[in-house]
Image 1 (cartoon, rainbow, N blue to C red):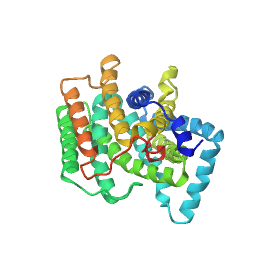
Image 2: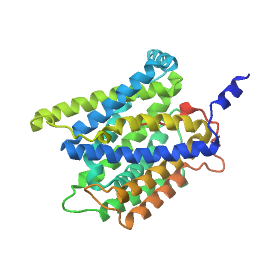
Image 3: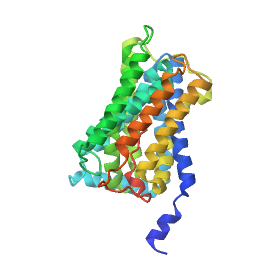
Image 4: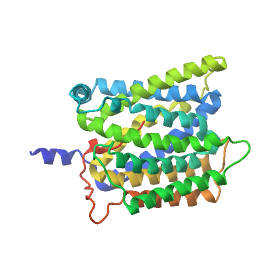
Length: 335
C-alpha cells in the first residue's frame, strides 16, 4: 500500500470533518464560558486561568507519554532551533494561549461569551493580516491586497461598533478591549505553532510547547497577583464541570488537527468560526452569565465577522488554491 493510500485511510469523510470543525468551534465558546465562570466564582481570574491551563498540560503530558511521534517531534524541534532553521521564539508561542485563557478568566463572564467571541475573532482577523505580511507563519510572506485589507477593516469596524454599543458604567472599558488584544496575540501564536509543527513533524509537539509555556507564565502571574492582593482563593467551587476548560482546550486542538486533513485550512477556519459564534450566542441565550444578555446587535455583529473572515480568507483568482488534502501540520493551534 502506498504512503498516499495510508494517509487517506486516516482521514475523516468530508461531512464528518465539517461537523468536527463546527463542534470544535462550539467547544472554544464553551471554554470561554467555563473559564469565565470559574474566575467569577473564585473571585480571581488569574488563578482560574492558571488552573485551566495546568489541567490541560497534565492531559497533554499523558498523551505525549504514549505517543512516540510526539516525543521524536520534540527532539526534532530542538535540533532545528540548534541549527538556526527554527527561531527560538516560536517555542514560546504558548504566551498567546496564556493571554487568551487569562482574558477568558477575567472578562468573558462579565461581558458575555458572544461579545467576547466577536471581539476576539475581530482582533484575530486584523492581526492575522499583519502577521501574514510579516511572514511569521510557515507559508512565508502574504502581501496585502485590497480584498484582504477590506476584510480586516470590516472586522475592525464591527469590533469598534460592538464595544461602543455595549459601553456601560459597571463594565470597565479594558474588559471589552481585552478579547481584542487576545485575538491579536493569538494570531501570532498560530503562526509560530505552524512553524514548530512543520519543523517537528507533529502538531502534538507544538501543542506540548504551548501548554508548558502557557502554564508556567500563568502560574507565575497568579502567584504574583496573590502576593499583591493578599492570597490565593481559600475555597474552590464544588461543581466539577467548572474545571473542564483545560480538557476542552485539548479536545478542540486535537479535533481540529484531525479535521484539517480532510477540510483544508480555509474550510476548517470558516467552520470553526461559525461554531464559535453560533455556540457563544446559544450559550448566552441558554445559560447567561452575570454580564450582558444577547441583544439585537450580537447576531448582526457575528454575521458581519463571518463576512470579514470570508473576505480575508478566500483566495483570489491568482491565489494559491487550498486543497482539501492539506496536511494537518499546517493547522494553526491554540490552547
